[in-house]
Image (cartoon, rainbow, N blue to C red; front, side):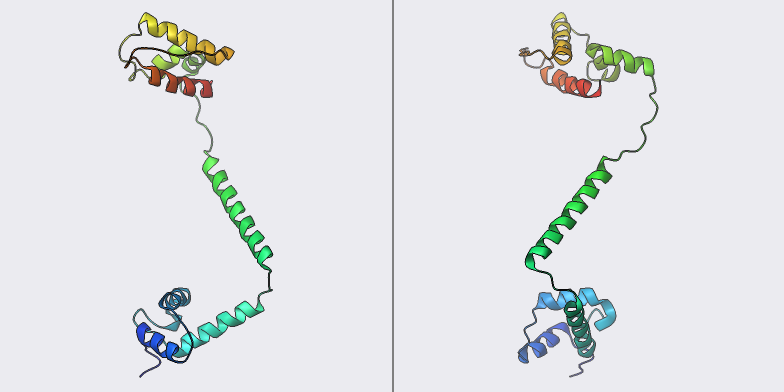
Length: 173
Protein backbone atom coordinates (compact mmCIF):
# COMPACT_ATOMS: atom_id res chain seq x y z
CA UNK A 1 0.00 0.00 0.00
CA UNK A 2 1.45 3.33 -1.09
CA UNK A 3 0.34 5.93 1.51
CA UNK A 4 1.35 8.70 -0.89
CA UNK A 5 -1.29 7.65 -3.46
CA UNK A 6 -4.39 6.30 -1.75
CA UNK A 7 -7.80 6.27 -3.35
CA UNK A 8 -10.33 8.14 -1.17
CA UNK A 9 -12.10 4.87 -0.30
CA UNK A 10 -8.79 3.28 0.77
CA UNK A 11 -7.91 6.31 2.88
CA UNK A 12 -11.28 6.22 4.63
CA UNK A 13 -10.94 2.50 5.32
CA UNK A 14 -7.42 3.00 6.73
CA UNK A 15 -8.36 5.97 8.92
CA UNK A 16 -11.52 4.35 10.22
CA UNK A 17 -9.67 1.16 11.22
CA UNK A 18 -7.45 3.24 13.50
CA UNK A 19 -10.41 4.53 15.49
CA UNK A 20 -10.48 7.91 13.76
CA UNK A 21 -13.96 8.47 12.39
CA UNK A 22 -13.83 10.35 9.10
CA UNK A 23 -16.91 10.42 6.88
CA UNK A 24 -16.87 10.52 3.12
CA UNK A 25 -18.42 14.00 3.15
CA UNK A 26 -15.77 15.27 5.59
CA UNK A 27 -12.98 13.94 3.36
CA UNK A 28 -14.63 15.54 0.33
CA UNK A 29 -14.86 18.93 2.15
CA UNK A 30 -11.22 18.66 3.24
CA UNK A 31 -10.12 17.82 -0.29
CA UNK A 32 -12.07 20.79 -1.66
CA UNK A 33 -10.54 23.15 0.92
CA UNK A 34 -6.99 21.86 0.47
CA UNK A 35 -7.20 21.60 -3.30
CA UNK A 36 -4.34 19.73 -4.98
CA UNK A 37 -2.08 20.24 -1.96
CA UNK A 38 -3.06 16.83 -0.54
CA UNK A 39 -3.30 14.88 -3.79
CA UNK A 40 -4.75 14.91 -7.26
CA UNK A 41 -8.30 14.29 -8.43
CA UNK A 42 -8.01 10.49 -8.05
CA UNK A 43 -5.70 9.97 -5.06
CA UNK A 44 -4.88 11.44 -1.65
CA UNK A 45 -1.43 11.64 -0.06
CA UNK A 46 -1.91 10.47 3.54
CA UNK A 47 1.13 12.39 4.81
CA UNK A 48 0.01 15.64 3.21
CA UNK A 49 -3.54 15.08 4.43
CA UNK A 50 -2.25 14.57 7.98
CA UNK A 51 -0.20 17.79 7.68
CA UNK A 52 -3.28 19.63 6.39
CA UNK A 53 -5.37 18.39 9.34
CA UNK A 54 -2.62 19.43 11.78
CA UNK A 55 -2.54 22.94 10.30
CA UNK A 56 -6.33 23.14 10.50
CA UNK A 57 -6.24 22.03 14.11
CA UNK A 58 -3.53 24.56 14.99
CA UNK A 59 -5.34 27.41 13.24
CA UNK A 60 -8.54 26.62 15.17
CA UNK A 61 -6.57 26.48 18.43
CA UNK A 62 -4.91 29.82 17.72
CA UNK A 63 -8.20 31.55 17.03
CA UNK A 64 -9.64 33.33 20.07
CA UNK A 65 -12.41 31.34 21.65
CA UNK A 66 -15.83 32.85 21.18
CA UNK A 67 -18.87 32.00 23.14
CA UNK A 68 -21.90 30.62 21.38
CA UNK A 69 -23.73 33.92 21.92
CA UNK A 70 -20.84 35.95 20.43
CA UNK A 71 -20.63 33.58 17.48
CA UNK A 72 -24.39 33.76 16.89
CA UNK A 73 -24.43 37.56 17.16
CA UNK A 74 -21.47 37.84 14.78
CA UNK A 75 -23.18 35.55 12.30
CA UNK A 76 -26.40 37.58 12.53
CA UNK A 77 -24.51 40.85 12.07
CA UNK A 78 -22.62 39.49 9.04
CA UNK A 79 -25.87 38.24 7.48
CA UNK A 80 -27.55 41.60 8.15
CA UNK A 81 -24.64 43.47 6.53
CA UNK A 82 -24.70 41.19 3.47
CA UNK A 83 -28.47 41.66 3.10
CA UNK A 84 -28.18 45.44 3.44
CA UNK A 85 -25.44 45.60 0.84
CA UNK A 86 -27.46 43.40 -1.50
CA UNK A 87 -30.50 45.67 -1.14
CA UNK A 88 -28.41 48.81 -1.71
CA UNK A 89 -26.84 47.30 -4.83
CA UNK A 90 -30.25 46.29 -6.20
CA UNK A 91 -31.78 49.70 -5.51
CA UNK A 92 -29.06 51.64 -7.29
CA UNK A 93 -30.25 52.22 -10.83
CA UNK A 94 -27.80 54.95 -11.79
CA UNK A 95 -28.52 58.30 -13.38
CA UNK A 96 -31.90 58.73 -15.02
CA UNK A 97 -31.75 59.69 -18.68
CA UNK A 98 -33.20 63.04 -19.72
CA UNK A 99 -36.92 63.10 -20.52
CA UNK A 100 -37.41 62.50 -24.24
CA UNK A 101 -40.56 64.60 -24.49
CA UNK A 102 -41.10 66.95 -21.52
CA UNK A 103 -44.42 68.26 -22.89
CA UNK A 104 -45.86 64.72 -23.17
CA UNK A 105 -44.68 63.95 -19.62
CA UNK A 106 -46.31 67.14 -18.28
CA UNK A 107 -49.62 66.43 -20.03
CA UNK A 108 -49.59 62.78 -18.89
CA UNK A 109 -49.21 63.96 -15.31
CA UNK A 110 -52.25 66.20 -15.68
CA UNK A 111 -54.57 63.66 -17.31
CA UNK A 112 -54.87 59.92 -16.69
CA UNK A 113 -56.63 59.49 -20.04
CA UNK A 114 -53.78 61.21 -21.88
CA UNK A 115 -51.29 59.01 -19.96
CA UNK A 116 -53.12 55.88 -21.15
CA UNK A 117 -53.26 57.04 -24.76
CA UNK A 118 -49.74 58.50 -24.94
CA UNK A 119 -47.84 55.66 -23.32
CA UNK A 120 -50.14 52.65 -23.78
CA UNK A 121 -51.64 53.21 -27.23
CA UNK A 122 -51.00 49.51 -28.03
CA UNK A 123 -53.28 48.51 -25.12
CA UNK A 124 -56.12 50.88 -26.03
CA UNK A 125 -56.51 50.17 -29.73
CA UNK A 126 -60.19 51.26 -29.82
CA UNK A 127 -61.56 54.68 -28.89
CA UNK A 128 -62.88 55.08 -25.35
CA UNK A 129 -66.63 54.86 -24.94
CA UNK A 130 -68.52 57.42 -22.88
CA UNK A 131 -68.63 54.87 -20.03
CA UNK A 132 -64.82 54.59 -20.16
CA UNK A 133 -64.41 58.36 -20.21
CA UNK A 134 -66.63 58.70 -17.10
CA UNK A 135 -64.78 55.90 -15.28
CA UNK A 136 -61.37 57.37 -16.14
CA UNK A 137 -62.43 60.81 -14.89
CA UNK A 138 -63.72 59.26 -11.66
CA UNK A 139 -60.52 57.20 -11.19
CA UNK A 140 -58.44 60.32 -11.66
CA UNK A 141 -60.47 62.09 -8.94
CA UNK A 142 -59.99 59.06 -6.66
CA UNK A 143 -56.22 59.42 -6.94
CA UNK A 144 -56.10 63.20 -6.72
CA UNK A 145 -58.68 63.70 -3.94
CA UNK A 146 -58.52 60.41 -2.07
CA UNK A 147 -62.12 59.55 -2.88
CA UNK A 148 -63.51 56.03 -2.65
CA UNK A 149 -65.05 54.40 -5.69
CA UNK A 150 -66.40 50.91 -6.44
CA UNK A 151 -65.69 50.10 -10.08
CA UNK A 152 -68.36 47.96 -11.76
CA UNK A 153 -68.18 47.42 -15.49
CA UNK A 154 -69.09 44.58 -17.87
CA UNK A 155 -66.68 41.68 -18.23
CA UNK A 156 -63.85 42.38 -20.66
CA UNK A 157 -64.27 46.15 -20.60
CA UNK A 158 -60.82 46.89 -19.13
CA UNK A 159 -61.33 47.16 -15.35
CA UNK A 160 -58.07 45.38 -14.48
CA UNK A 161 -56.06 47.15 -17.16
CA UNK A 162 -57.31 50.57 -16.08
CA UNK A 163 -56.59 49.86 -12.43
CA UNK A 164 -53.06 48.58 -13.14
CA UNK A 165 -52.28 51.66 -15.20
CA UNK A 166 -53.91 53.88 -12.55
CA UNK A 167 -51.49 52.53 -9.95
CA UNK A 168 -48.58 53.19 -12.32
CA UNK A 169 -49.83 56.71 -13.07
CA UNK A 170 -50.36 57.50 -9.37
CA UNK A 171 -46.84 56.26 -8.60
CA UNK A 172 -45.18 58.22 -11.38
CA UNK A 173 -47.09 61.48 -10.97
